[in-house]
Image (tube, rainbow, N blue to C red; front, top):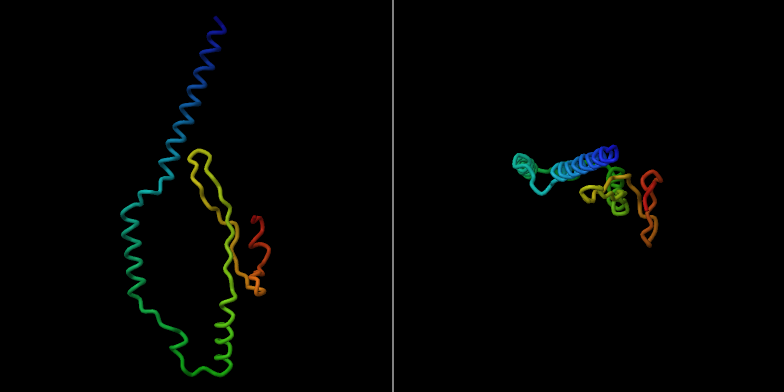
Length: 132
């Protein structure tokens, strides 16, 4: 008689844990669904894009014509060097255990510059720390 009671207790625990696991999976999959964005969010994004397009952009260099020779040389230097500046982003890829959704987690961002003709880039260590 005692073994039947223990068996039913074990069976009850297995059923309860299984139901809890399935409820967690169902809740998590509904919580992370991205395929149906909210209509209000789309409207606010459309308004933001419309406002950005209507704003006239002024070219700062064209606004001033009384630049000194030193200022013009500095602007030329920045224009030539800007092609060698690199923006670096490192990420890790993680997969959710329950939903199998893959997400990229930012690890570091920063800037660097092109060092040579082969394309080697020099940056700070904290930007690439932990990257593969």
